Length: 332
Image (tube, rainbow, N blue to C red; front, side):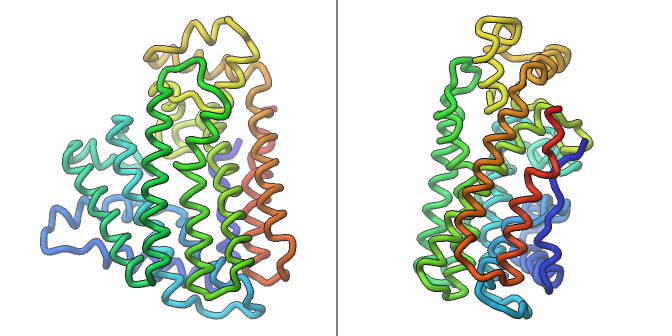
């Protein structure tokens, strides 16, 4: 069994250098005159991460470049702004979920409390907006709209907490805002700062959205089948929090009014969560969810199909294919 797929974007020439520059800018951006705020804002930055969203931004900016050179500073800053939004949303998510760990380290809220975690998340979002403003009005407006979509997606999810009647359409609408919007914006911002033709900007935006949908479905499958160590956070936490994702929704529909339905709809203890995960894995919901992830990957690849096979386009294509191929056996 494997956890989150590796990032094939790292195979793109100069991507290692570009993401190192992203990390440098991230650390520089959160430095303040207040040592505590600097420590809080930089906590998850120091914990690391694959930096997939900045990678997508940088790759999108170079999508039409036959010979991949050093990433432009604008694409690096675009990636930083997107990553700051992602990190800020994680701070807020962990407060709502009462999470104790994130990326194998203590969560911000567990270490400093909810109030400081919320303010830290707000600070990261503000810094993201400040950077985006320096990249032009269209990028600034896009990032602001993305933050709004993240909030809308989170509200959609909260409305359905502990709801055993949650529908597939409600789930897809929520992840479209919570996850796909940020991948979509990462690609679009990269394309905009790369000054690519509008049809290419739109195609890369579609790619990011479809990839983001597949990414979240895979993440939700992993929450059902992976371990704490593989995830870098508590496995089964969505079930504990009453967030019923695609494999759970389909498992409930498949069994009608059986054991899983009787267990859900209320908070679960550790043993109950383990039993619920086992029930979800039994009835084909996991491979069915992976099939939908495959369908979204096909959409993403279709968006790239008209483009020349530059190193950046091939890296994006490889990331999409690898996302599902590396977890294809999880439901077996």
